[in-house]
Length: 119
Image 1 (tube, rainbow, N blue to C red):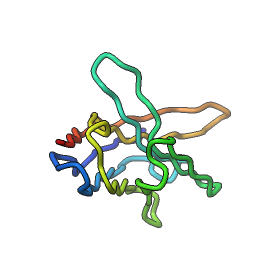
Image 2 (spheres, rainbow, N blue to C red):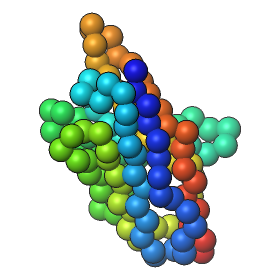
Image 3 (tube, rainbow, N blue to C red):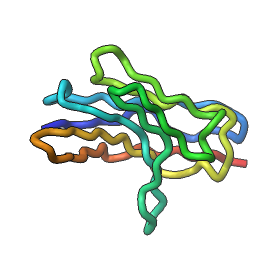
């Protein structure tokens, strides 16, 4: 089992920067991939950025060049650095962890943190 808790987020003006962080507890050594998704009310979650133990990193097109995902060496905390924020970046940002065990994949989610960008 893995528990994820986000921190950061908040209200900023367009063009400003913001960091959101995710702290994992429980079986953190079993986490294979970690990332960030965004979700608007009534819509499905969308990938923002993700990185994994094989060194692969993926970004949504809207995030490339502006957002950077990073993690600590213990793989129990990861952050999303968001630059040049736009009003359309407003959403709830959820951290995500994927555990692969016994040929199965398990998904874990944080509760989400609100990011609001005013124009």
